Amino acid sequence: MSPNNSFNLPIPPNAGTEKHPWDFFHLNNVERGPSGDYMISSRHFSTLYHLSAANGSILWELGGKQPTWKMDDNAWFHFQHDARFHGEDTVS
Image (cartoon, one colour):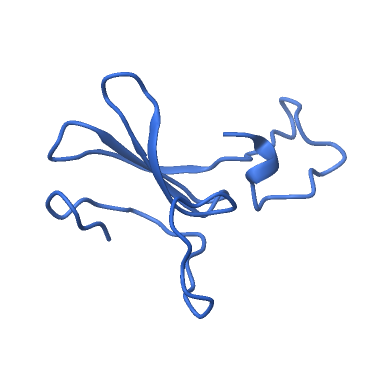
């Protein structure tokens, strides 16, 4: 997960110090799903990540700059919050 995929750009000139941290990822929530894998929501990446509990690999990405699936051009998926599993194949 590269900081270049963040929508929290450009990096402010004084960012990255203790006094002025730069939150490129902004983790909203982590949830363990029915299969035991994890979903994390990154506000600044505008992405939900489904991660393997076995090895930490990314199983799929919803939204963001490198999505697993292309959304319709009229779909809007940005800066989501509090993503949840609803069974094996539904998230909200």
